[in-house]
Length: 107
Image 1 (cartoon, one colour):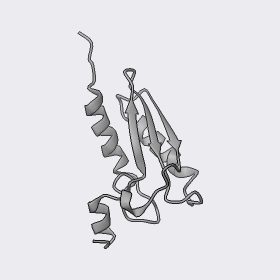
Image 2 (image 1 turned 30 degrees about the vertical axis):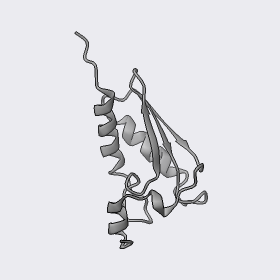
Image 3 (image 1 turned 180 degrees about the horizontal axis):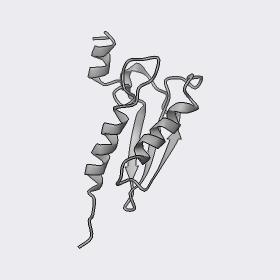
Image 4 (image 1 turned 135 degrees about the horizontal axis):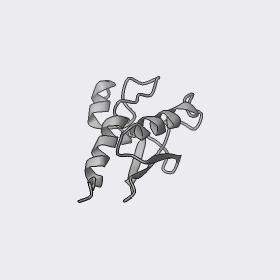
């Protein structure tokens, strides 16, 4: 019997990893900040993450996507990971979770 990993379960593990990555200028993780638009996991456990940055000129534009890729790849179940940056739709504060808004004193 082969060990099939539930993609939803793997998705949760990926989200937990994403919650350990912080924008260095904002004390909130990138997931709660609303920078992660989507996480795709295929049947081969290859992962594609669609994310954005707070601004196109973000100082971590080069390093943050690499950090996301490396940390997601570190999960045993993940075969490969790719991060795609998009600015459509552009990031706004409305994309932040209630938790992030509370953390930043916006509620």
